[in-house]
Length: 139
Image (tube, rainbow, N blue to C red):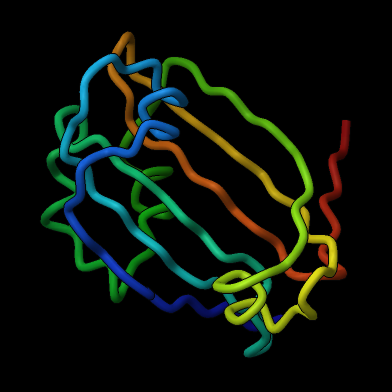
């Protein structure tokens, strides 16, 4: 299948409480907030909502995120010392229903991943998958 990627938004914003909690931060920090859509064969399959702490990762500010996804750049350029992954489901509504072309109320698979380098947060991302998405793990 053919992979494609579209940047939805890229903003420098104060971290909300939920993101501070995920990172274990006590004080608000300005972070890069990136939303993007990943497509397979021109169909949306992942809506990515990502926060990047630019204190640990200032180089991301130089990256052209219209051409390269933050995820690809981070995987190649930013090794991490620890990470958390969580899995859940939500009901499609609003933005995620629109971007993923999902019927309102349909179940969507969610992956949340947060990484650190030592005590410093790197990134936290919520990836919401379109209906029919399958995660396959091989041992």
